[in-house]
Length: 248
Image 1 (cartoon, one colour):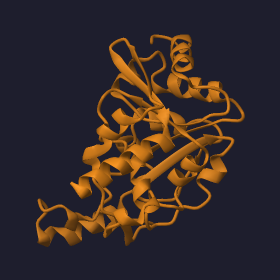
Image 2 (image 1 turned 180 degrees about the vertical axis):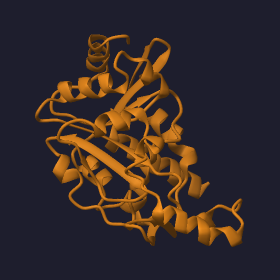
Image 3 (image 1 turned 90 degrees about the horizontal axis):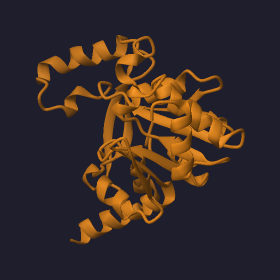
């Protein structure tokens, strides 16, 4: 994919169309496109049109409670928390956001959710709806942008065969009470340290869940795998994988 027309052709072939809600994941090879990830983002927005929506998310991996990292000495944790409180994440966001997320964040009309660790960016018809409420607790929960993505019968656009960033599957923990195990996390928010609730999750089954997804379409373009599948379907597969593991 060396041009905007190439990207549009591939996206059409894999199933992206008018009115769809699409969550897109980044892959380093997207930076090799003419115009970088912005070419992909603009092509997606054009294809889904005025009735569609394009979104992405990023985790601010450094903005986490240092007590969760056994490699950090106990005596150093207070100082690290203070550093996190004072750090301007918006000013230095390009350090933490991948180029696809950054490209979407620069489009006119994009909106963001309100969470210090899980940052969700969206543009399109349902942008306001998807970021309408984002509590501090359970950033992948029933009041999150990910629940809205599920309600809107959204799709996932994924590149490559690494699935460790498919954290949108964590929504299933909020939807199934038998899977719930609540933990406490912490993050810097509004120049102060705050704690929030989340679910203990298993990321090792992401790849298996995607492989089992019956709605998945896959293309190989320039040696890169491009996959497109329904969010609801992959959530169901992930739930089955977890249930099998627990019974196991």
